[in-house]
Amino acid sequence: MSRLVQYEQYDVMLTLRNGISQAVASGSEAEAHAAVGRLQGYLIGLHTAGEIEKSDVAVLEADMMSGIAFLYNARKAGHAH
Image (cartoon, rainbow, N blue to C red; front, side):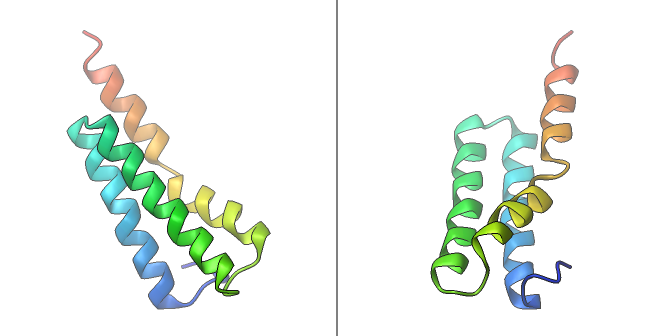
């Protein structure tokens, strides 16, 4: 868990990340982009509410997106043949 946010906030972010992972795994680019937008919107909302600093938004986004690029590339490679 990140030290930048409360447990409940981190739990919401993990749920949002799972949505991104599911969209990527299913091959739905539109849903993957929408899910990323929901995560980014949540982080911006936390910043706007004064819960996190602006610099924390990028750090938390990178934390949540870690592994997603690997999943996307693995799915793409699996369909290359």
